[in-house]
Length: 193
Image (cartoon, rainbow, N blue to C red; front, side):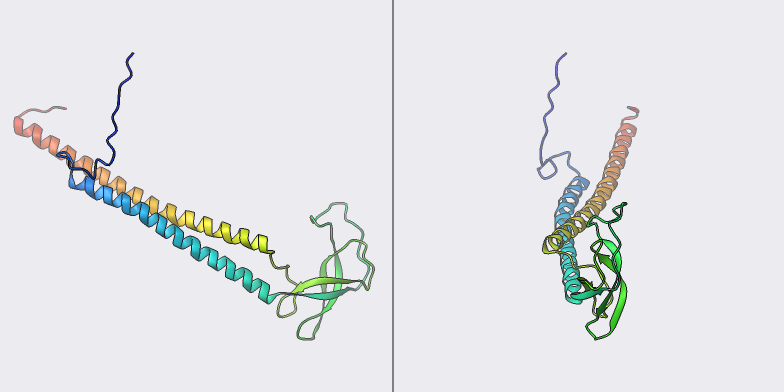
């Protein structure tokens, strides 16, 4: 069995060709513009998302501060269930907020810590407990991933729209071919198919 040879003519829509139609040229420009636009929109979305994440991290760092807190009563021993990865337990602590008010709430403390021991807690501007700000490595990861995902989604959306336009142009081309075949068949007085 002989293998058939297939010749691929690249960039045929851009070359002079007697069989080329206007819809072929439009399709070539739409696909080219779609890819360029997908790259530009993706890059713009990535940069905007990365900037937004970076500003959010900086805002979190600016709004939170570490303050000393005193353990009000003895902390329980280690939990057999090991609920948290840092093996800390919940204990009642007291601290003074930046505005001078005293707060009491439960926070994560080392297991078995005696009452009166000092630990550090993170508070926001109003003095309420908050999570510690992300580290510089975590901030870089959040920024990079947020930018990459936003860029990929935006670029894929543009490519999806380009693909839909490409399908519409394909349908139009097939309809034109069908109409031309119909015209050729009826002009000669016979049907080929």
